[in-house]
Image (cartoon, rainbow, N blue to C red; front, side):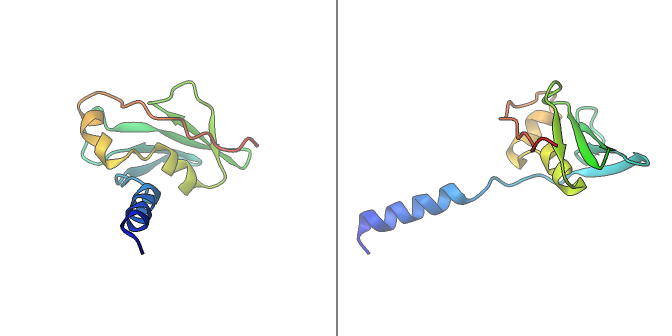
Length: 107
């Protein structure tokens, strides 16, 4: 394998590695409603809410308040709120880093 081919192969592998995602705390607040936040109790740790309605999981994200997000499963809905680990310090400091919205499939 040539040096150029090996370098391109390494770069393409690096691009495919997804960013590390942080752990979140999921608390059921009622039947069909969950609160998703970063662990630790910071006032800025709240990420959003998930609601089960008509067989779909609707996501209300504090970082994208006007986006209409839906998922097929609770795990998918929680993952929509899960921030990258690198963004956690900014979130806990009160800043919400801009991210591209991961819009779910329409029902």
